[in-house]
Amino acid sequence: MKVQIIGRRELLPDSVNEAIDYAEQKTAEYDQYTFTVCLAYGSREEIVEAVRAIAADHAEGNIDLESIDEAEISKRLWTGDMPDPDLVIRTSGEERISNFLLWQLAYSEIFFEKKLWPEFDERDYTKIINNCLLYTSPS
Image 1 (cartoon, rainbow, N blue to C red):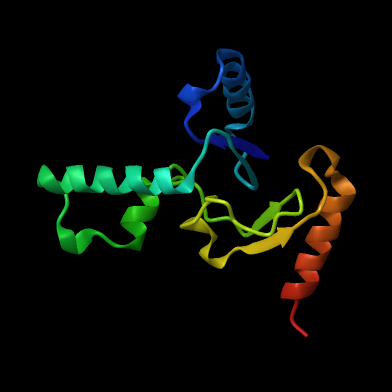
Image 2: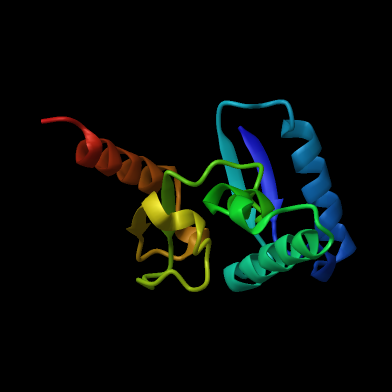
């Protein structure tokens, strides 16, 4: 499983960035599954940065207005090299998105789990996967 971290890593301590670099380098060649962790992340900020990058490219004459579409915006997001998530699990009992992957979640399955992240384990994950399979299986 490939591990990727998105967000404003410059806000994180050096020791955390070193651990992130290690995990990403060790798993970089995996391509079947991706496990993405968002740290120091806000979706609105991500979208604003993408729009600014597109606006700058347009001002420099590198992109026509007619070329700006969903795909162009998607590739400018911090997740631009990742597929949109099929499944998002929100722990803590909160039933809201909370500025998380606002653009990318358009067609995702979202599960809300009452347990806190440290309590969430393999059994909980398996239960959600099984529910997801039952929900999406043809009758």
